[in-house]
Length: 508
Image (tube, rainbow, N blue to C red; front, side, top):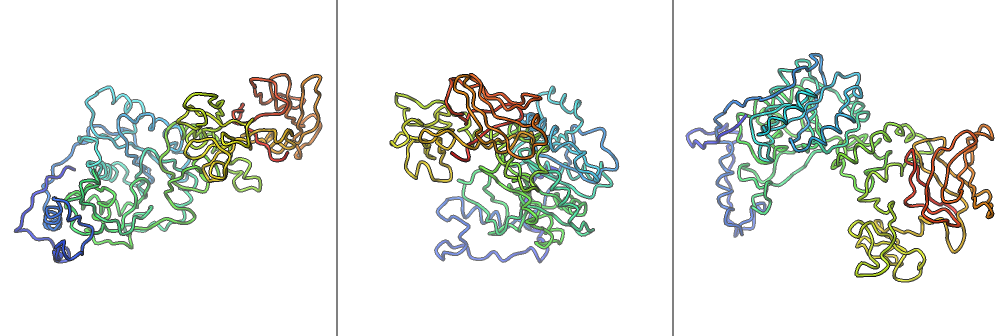
């Protein structure tokens, strides 16, 4: 619904919302949320004081397009906020956690929430997938509440048996298995509840420097406790309360907080906004852990995933997630590293700059360049600092974001690696390979996989022949790694083969 706000001094709100204006004199140092150094501060206060005294003239919105075939037995409905230019995100969601079979025993449906478009060809996507809800408003941050209103009104009509309504962003990695378990652990009652990552005591911002987050409408220093809109769910009763109260209140720029304001106007307070922390926070903001499959398995919603990364990680996650509950769970921690070049750029291991102004520089900004391994004791290597300089000090080699290239090399002080750890999505070739023998005449080096071998012909070995390393047994050659030049010992770093197989040295 669209709202046109008109202040009518003759119409006061209920007594419980007719708050004391207070004293907003800058000289007294109180009410620090208002930046009195800014010219707009007084105006912000005067506008905000009138929040509960405003009335809204409601203009009925039109749903321009909607799905034609929603299962009438749907009891779990997902609304994903998106935009027309984010089709790549929608396509990946459809291929990953948007597959409704993952949510059994619930009958689930996904819809994407989008504003109108001037390009009629965009609607071809709706005809193809039948999962987009389009409203007659412009897609913008300020209009996110219109998406909520549109979604809730449509959901109550289209899904009469809906029990749970999820609302989230299109850059979330949602673990459907953890989410279903979370739903099973909740007591879904007839009283309205919202569950999510609760924002406590968030301040209203009036300074123009906050851009789209500037709020000159809300009339209190703090917002009611509310859940992050990136990943939340609510029961049908909450949907009904919010839908009923949206047209009664002036819309604020913070759509997440506006949901809590609607709940409050319906008579429900902080006790009806539930923070999910166990068995995991419902929403996490991972950095280097974002490709760790077991971190994903023990999470529910993970924020800020590009579609390429989500698509890359998903099949590995499905294949390996059960290993996260076994003793050898650490063996799969690195399988997804190559899906995230931001934190694992070093896997490309491009040769260092030999001269020029970029000599001694490393990292993404410098063409994924590594650091020199032949000069381990000088200031030029072998570690890359977070500031993208090669060096050998602890600030280059020992910090959390430091990359130590000598630990990716299979030689150390002239010695070959004795034990190689192989990471792979194929569990039968993952494990520890121990140095066995070499034949310098034929240029072969052999590492044998220890343990879990039923017969000699099933024994996998890591073997070098000419300019290629293989993982093979007497029955099959599984993975091949080509190398640029003949080395005495195996080098790793850039070496990936089939089944996302990579290697590192664990003992020299």
